[in-house]
Length: 400
Image (cartoon, rainbow, N blue to C red; front, side):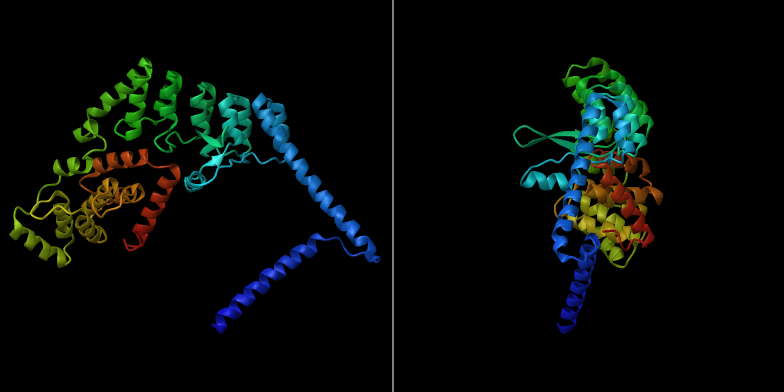
């Protein structure tokens, strides 16, 4: 304890020293006549206050110029150093505020406002100045609520601004960015703007075998947007020619069992005796036996169906580099089950690793990744990619 106290005291001294130096550095030099010091300090405070007021005024002018589409004034604000990634505050209380922060949502940003208003030149100016086009945003509404706006591309789709959407896509906007099953394609399907839908489909935003792809098609049909629905249906029909039937008939329900039952049933124990022999081999460290035992527990072949045991044996084999076990583990995390927490991040990670390691189920793994990504934010996809790299680099010992 004395050492801990000394450490804490030392840290406190360092903090106090920094604070004192910062305070001293911010004060004017003492005058010979100490009676003038309060007046001098007051002048410094007034100067700081005036600077803050000037900054606030410049930011207000930027917001106003964006709303009007005044590109000259926007450029003037940018040249004056106004932050093009500033955001309007959103004041909400309780769980919603926590959810917004956890999801990485921000208040309305300048480029999202420009996209909402359809101002192409203003949007271009903000992008050139470093605006984050993929920031996921909301804005306050009357009654202390919030309105989801999404990214700049989603905002352009919301108000059917085709030229802005085209500019954003050309400048690298993430066409797959989504939050809570809402993305630019679904937004465009809601409004029925076939030009924006065509742009997004051409940019690779339509994944027919995913939940979001299915939602876009069903949204267009439900809203009576026939031209959009026909375009998306044509994509689905083409996809169905090569996709496993399970992905076409039902994206979520039974997807894991459907994939496994149609492709990986070899080597399953037929009775209790074969199950015991398989377990003995698995407990002896045989990775192939561990993978097959994990599959047996998932399917209930020769043993009682048990997802938690399936996860345990899949993981043992996966950590030995068995690609098919890595596929099984990823697919299991996609669905979740008794004693297994559903995790799109872990599903994406293991499925990606399985493909890289040459799983015989590569095509199914790619489709499952599409499904996972339709449920994930861009931040979660990036996190899954980083975790996959760390997992492989650690020889499967740091895989989370």
